[in-house]
Length: 91
Length: 154
Image (cartoon, rainbow over all chains, first blue to last red; front, side, top):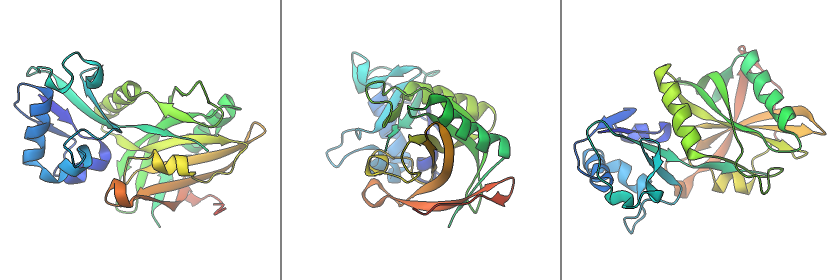
């Protein structure tokens, strides 16, 4: 599957905007990604190993948080995983 | 100080969006190319503000909308350079809320003050730092068609 890397994290992923990984689930895809690019780990995960609260993961067009199996969801070769940090603010 | 380049058309579109949504905040994404001195914005894409509970002083872009914006941008060979939003009847300065909820390090956050429905000052702040723990906003120069615009440091 292809994992799309957001602009701020590309510097930690060899300047790539996407990385192809071979993994059976979302969690293992992220594991494969951070094994190849270990500097990404602290930007994606808390020190307890949980995905940071502001990091949104979309499997194709589905928010992984709301999938029944969440990060244990199975993925297929043609799937895409988008990493999208949240956007918010105000005065 | 980094530089944010954009065309007059993009600059005016960002400001017009703030007037259009007044008294609520507008928001959107900036698409462009990274250069050595900063981002060169090629397009601004309007986004919906999901904070209907407090739209006059908060904004939030639905992540799925952003996934789609980024997907379209990638097809055009562009990346997400940053974001813009408006501050209705409030200065064009970043707030603590803006900083705490900003997570796109190295990207530009453009803020337009809209006073009584009219866009006044537009400033841009680059989210500097190497991590969430040391992030900070740094004022940057906006060049519109390669010409500086007046920046209000507050």
